[in-house]
Length: 381
Image (cartoon, helix red, strand yellow):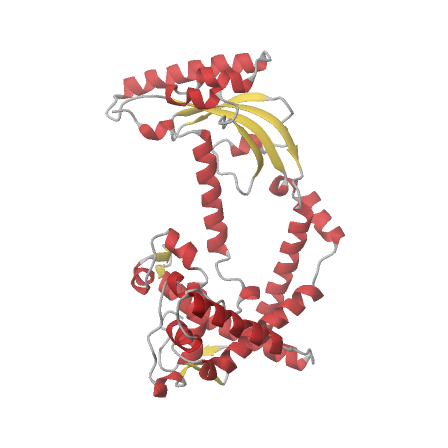
């Protein structure tokens, strides 16, 4: 039986690399401070349904931020929002229940589970919200969220109707309480979001700052276009070392032949139909299905083994070479086409720098706020 992994096409590798990059980015910024507004999720998409809290427990102190009491209801509201607003991402890893969150690791090094992560993040989110509301009040920044609240409740009605439920039943299923019990919590949440949006406008970086960031880090932001064909060493799973070396030599011979022809001016796409593995030749023979051309790849989203070669500033248009990946025993024939600034790069940089400035400010004003947990309800903190 042959090693099927070696037959993975460049298209497959590119797709998986981009998916992995997206997962890493999402995990890194899984909860953004700027978007801590309560997100209403349809019941069908819920990862976790909060159990109904007894009336006497809803407003019982769960922990404190400075000297201000935080009820179990407020904590559950934030934690549920954080989990459910990321339910699609979590389900990608097979997490569909609280039990899954309790067992699956968020950070292998620290031993932190996803359940612990969301518990910690919910407490931190509450702390940050309280710091923002207090900061806005101290600076006399008006936070009129009356219309925001109406819009929020209208969305609750819409989602409840789509789930075949009343708004009251929907909120109880989602948060374990009704609108009257949740109103102050939702209001504070909306105030914090309103202030974060105000900060975002106030801390907008200049176009000049975005350009300077790009000029200083072009390798990070530039895009490249190139063509690539992977030529794997083909051998059986139980192949001996000698057989593997023979297969590698055969693959290298093909890669060298193709490279020579590319350098001689022959068409890369046409050559792919000759040198691709037999099961992929028809794919490369049709220009509609040919996957050798890769466009708009950036270093951040490139996890290809030949990424260093691609983003070397010494690369020139029309340059061709071979890269051998020792881990997979695959030879890659590469044809560099161009390097350039992609669309909306400066706008994206400006947004990122502004977002970072807002995060830094919220972190700064939250630094003096402390979480105390006399009942040990937050054991992971």
